[in-house]
Image (cartoon, rainbow, N blue to C red; front, top):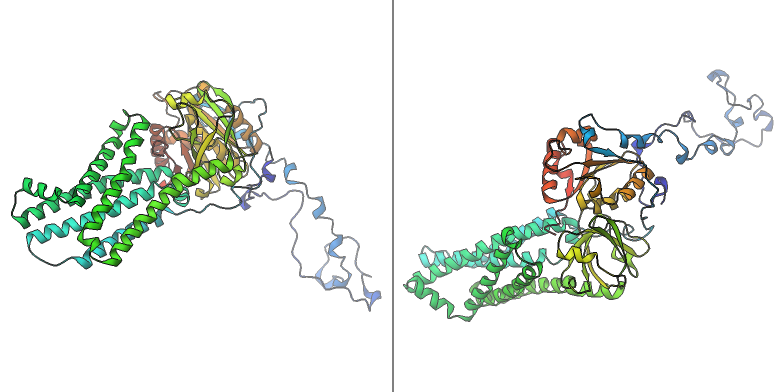
Length: 564
């Protein structure tokens, strides 16, 4: 373990540098002209050998001043690591905030030294990853919707006839629905710049919300088209339905709509909880077939088929999205598997129901994984190979080794405990935006709940800062539920950071995450960036408390892995 001052990510901050008591501040003097060799008799004849205070009127000639190279002041400065003033800083981590909070706060206790995993001197942090800001992504999606609306407006025919009005509305909603399907596929293409800049959980939430809008647009398109055809042909709705389904392109669109409705139903939270992940995923793959069927329908419609340029641009947009999906969902994972040859090196018990899996390969630093990120892991053994499991890195990358820490919460996570060394691993990623690039303040609070400590443990070790700049609060039901405790305590001692274990049942009378309790533990809480990771209920409650305690929403950084 390297010391704080020599840490490869350590950046000294000006406010942390205290005035040195050993050396008084020197007055800056103008540069001294060099001595004139032609007048040796006048050089230094009246200049004392030691610098003394001399009145300005009797001050000797500047030519007699000793050369700068002979000044010994700088050479006597003590090393930064030898300053005793900071040694008492770690005492903050064992001081209870108040008598009430002390009942649930367990401070750092001495433990046998544990050497936490180090940070590579070169690798992911040396070349920053490309990131697309959420605002730019939103602006791009809105601009695309505006272009689709413009395309419709250029082809619309002004008319007061009812069938034309129905048809115009059907054309607009159909174009927007087709564009919406492309956006949904693009959000889930796992493009690194989008994943790192926006975050996998935000993308998943926007994907789910966008899916509702797309289904609404498709329903509106179908109703308007049906009504327009019925009015135009003077037929009843049942006859109009039969007439429309006789067209092959409309029949294809109907089949695609049925697939999208199935995807929407299985994505509802109440339904998804009852389905196996493999079943949900298989139904979701039907969205790709639905998009292809919808594309066939769009090419036959008057809005796209009416012009060569329009048909070419619409086909190009679909081709680009298809290439991105194939590249990042298939080609990149297969190439990474062949290049890095990841295999399980060790499965280590960390506590009741918790294991750490060490995965070793070749050239792992080229994955450019950052602390706080996660991969989707596919372990090639029976019962696990068909599912990609999202687990965060619980330590920085070191010596071509990745580490994840997993708690047994379901069938798949229980099988992880039985992995054997040598098992081949396919890893897709890294994903996630819960990284140091979100930091905007000198002081940082890491707030973890349960096994949500895994990404924050890596950040606790690697976030740059001096003593007292980083604080970790770890919420758990009891001491046996604390994961990686010895490592956390070792890191806290090494970098002289504050570490508090907030122990107690979630339904207890005292809430250690209440605004007052948080302010007692972290007095200048509103001046911190907060990184939050834990179970969804705990994360929502903690976010509400942080907001009431004065922390702006823009400085609360979290990722919900239920949506990742």
